Length: 157
Length: 407
Image 1 (cartoon, helix red, strand yellow):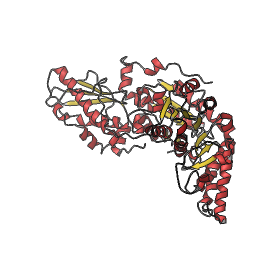
Image 2: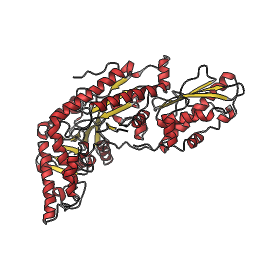
Image 3: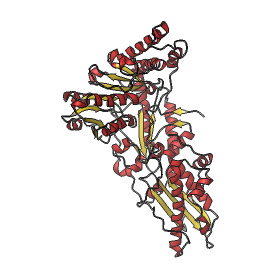
Image 4: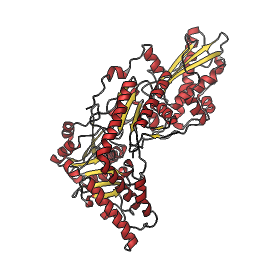
């Protein structure tokens, strides 16, 4: 099945921004699991004014998963923790000029990965971030977010 | 950018010699084979000659070969047609868990019609056990359908043995030979096959044409009602150019079988060896011994298949994967799951299928590109990071450490 990716998605997949790790990150969050075929891990470096100075990611997943991780990290950089909460899956999708319907779950995963990293930051610092709930989709307790239509593979006919 | 096409199990390019023999039947010789005047007779003669030629390649009689629109129709016709025509004798059917969807979904349709179907499991190499097959046969079993060779992992099934067991129990035997026809020698009498499906576009022939071999005396209901084409068994005006092209493609393929199969096998083994030696955390899927000469299917750990395919496509390499992301469904390929691959590494599978135009340079370029792609994707992978930190055990290392031997 040919994938209908926008140029932005292909750009962020081919040249992903912010790949890597942050040593002693202020917050680190991992969502998804290998059985489902996508895992996203986001690292945040947050300064004393609650501003995200740097964001890095590592992702196991399809082209859309890598592109959304790349875009999500771009979008949160320079934002305050509170502002970063507004980087929703919809915002990530819009910044990428859209995603094919079967890949919308990738953008949800990116939103959750950011939330998981912020939650980790809040926990480490004993603070509460208004509007942030404990993420549920850590590895092992992943609730399927694959809101996709079941389409059978009909190649090789 | 040069394009390297390594997806010949999906479809193949039409050979120029095949196009040459097809072209007149689109224009000057456009007649309907059912018409009585010479134009119709020419078309009718061309179809008859193609039928005779194709029958000869599998040791069948001309009257036992029926043209269809492709492998899917042939499979549906054989399976549904036979089951319905013979339902009075019993309603139990047998197939395997690794069949193509054309077969699996035909059986599922029959289940909705009140038939009972046994889906035989396969071993880690994708092979069906003849003893397991025999044990599954019941008093009311009427039909078994087992693919000749698997489209994803290339495993060649023990067809002669399975067909002999079916015959001993009075069970009709169909085989989906879409990947095997003109890729391995097939003689329907020696192998004891009652029904066989084949398709032209897997052997450098045109799309939209296939055949069903029906052994004389085998009763099947028609799928298509209408005119008297195909001896009243399959209505619709014959796809004359397609049929002529199918015969030519098969003629070329069978003539070259003795040289082409060893050539492809050499390239295949070169690819497999390079992958297993040069790429860490790689595993060959399927059997090395009982394998189509043109099929390479490997799993790579810590990465997901679609990313691999896109990066390879960016280098001009056309290949396919059994990952869920590329199929649009939630689960990875049913074949990879049936041979016991955990989801994690089934997602990271890659299929290279070689063809008439494939060279060693193509293979080397593809393997070099694959190495670079995997290094790149693994660098991005949180699973690989966890592995390097000692927080994640490699599935391939712990469960599939011994590569199967080439024989």
